[in-house]
Length: 321
Image 1 (tube, rainbow, N blue to C red):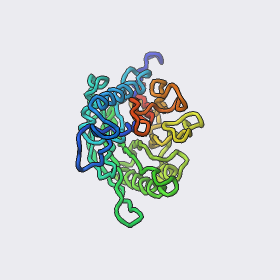
Image 2: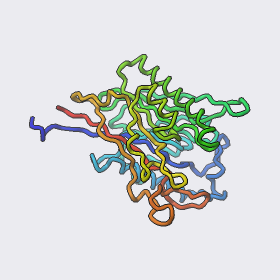
Image 3: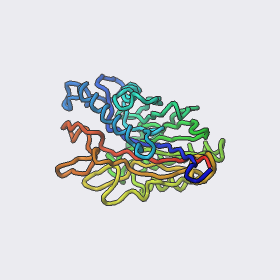
Image 4: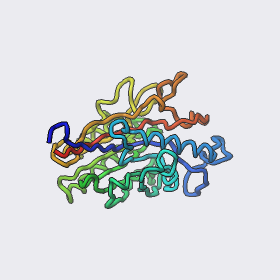
């Protein structure tokens, strides 16, 4: 076989914070009062349907230029429940693909969870479970945050482990809240170590909105203690990131992986590239926020955009020679 005839298959794996994907129905177990018809934000079915269409369009295009297919796995943050994920995969741009859903309710105080959608024709789920991160507030009481989702499955006849995160926010201040994110990092390290006890050569992907940049303490701790490679480190600059706060770019959304993804073996998954999906249609095109993510709301003003985060993604290749 000539080099030009060698066959390479490319798989895209992404992570996307969807910015408050809530349905329009009241759920007494969640703090969803901002996202209901008749409230100040006036969250209507029309706006919800538009949000689903927008997000579906984004997901369908991540990595599409490389292999004419949408991602096989997408880790997600800020979803209210399983129903919104069902609606998402049935929306205009995604309904022709064979996406399945993994979602568990957490006790997060905002009522948002992480989840995953995946191409059922390519990725076969073997197991999924969640792990809680035990936190305490200033009064010594339990403080609830998003659970960590772990999904095990087969991609191109190889077992991979996907760990999906949405770590505690900086709402109380970056330094004040840092110990909570370190706690989350410690939990992920425990999970990675437990996987390796059973599967020494495990191929593991850790993705999420970490609410910290690659250089912050929590992410550096995760990288070092779990022996992971952070693909996102080179992507953050003064002019580029996955979210923007006070006109400063952050790269809170990251994907890390075990170094065995760099090994070259026939018919084995191998890391190819990583990027931020920040295509121009996802950005504000005018005004002082030009170039920043085009979000659904600016404060309480409805703007009709996509999300306040850009997705991030990696691509894995399998070569037949």
